Image (cartoon, rainbow, N blue to C red; front, top):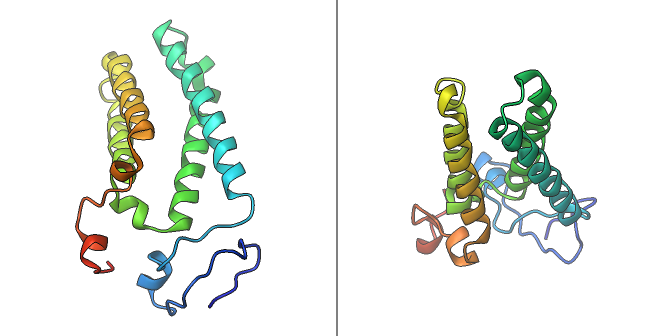
Length: 153
């Protein structure tokens, strides 16, 4: 058993070695005290900042007035991704992580298709809402059969 400082002592982690696969894909997800509170805080700020950003675009506010909300949305989104990836890179192979990558791909298109930004942001909002509220079995579904077959990437 491996004991990590600051990690919830009720989590028992099996040694996975020092190889990259073991670091990125631990046998059990990593957690730390306060991780749930950090996720809730980041998610709340993320939803608030994206809501203001979306509303600003909807009502035609100038880009300069929306910049702080854009930066706050990007910062909190990056924080949420970091927390998920710290837990395990398995998240990126699950439907939840893949939906986040899809949202990022659509968001990257926004400057290119600026006149369609409201439609693109609406699609991102719908993907986020559906992805967050779908049953856990779907959110944690592996698009590639890594875990179902017992194979670790």
